[in-house]
Image (cartoon, rainbow, N blue to C red; front, side, top):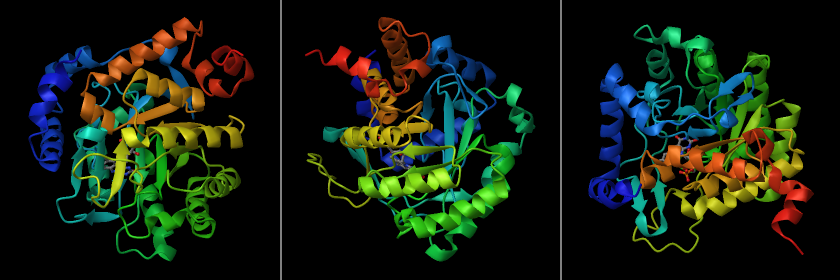
Length: 375
Ligand SMILES: Cc1cc2nc3c(=O)[nH]c(=O)nc-3n(C[C@H](O)[C@H](O)[C@H](O)COP(=O)(O)O)c2cc1C
């Protein structure tokens, strides 16, 4: 079980992180139609258990652990994510047109902290290119829900040079072009690497975006918002007001942080968004807050510093019905998905629960609290 961190990671971590990531995605893209290889990967890394299945927004999630946005921005490897065991995958962030992002170096490992700092800046090939990935090679058929293996989310952003008061047009354009190809959509207003993007979390600006998208959507597709862990709790509550007003389907908590809590790694002071272990606590706090404020009625996707089944369980019992992972996958390798899913089933069994849904928000129930904190 320790094979990856012991032998593979030390080797991979000698390579330039962005080159490595790019090469992996390109290779997966090239190998997309290698059925035998995909079957092998599937056997190695996936795990199916009925207790982990959920039906959310009319979508079937075979398990609660998804791939977070940013890993497969252009959807080049999207066929693979179910084979790697993920219960869903989020593509993007995608902007209306292709952009290069910030100049390299822009991706840094922080091994002593189990973190990553990135200032990629929405490097992606644009909406039309993503649409092509999702429709070419007769794969359009896979968009028939019964043929699809896992739900696919699409994370939408604004172009670097689009002024904030016109940002709604970028989100709307992305949604209009890709509406038919995603199972859910994410309004990303929380990446720290596009100048002023996070200002869109302010009520007045956010309102315009939500209004435009829901008008186009007619509440047909689930629309979610992804928020920053650096918001004050009061600002999160303001956002939740809009979430209710505009009937959003859920919140993703959280994106990366610009804070630098007690880091030891040499690259700790690089500019950009920090992910991984240093984010675990704050993102779980945000999940607790949202669950409380929304009385457990709003689906939450919990993301930030998940490295183990215990981390995943904390976020589920805090109130997340779905989870996502990025940095943990890089540090622990592809085996982490199965390991976490097995661990979750073990926890359910130990508590005599039959489905993961019963564990969502459990930490807020008084019987659970007294069970865990006996006087
Ligand atoms: C290299 C890198 C690129 C990312 N790009 C995006 C992105 O394009 N859009 C987005 O919403 N989040 C992006 N994220 C944030 C992740 O989706 C996730 O919210 C964050 O990393 C916390 O999860 P983790 O601790 O499991 O990595 C990126 C993260 C990393 C490390």
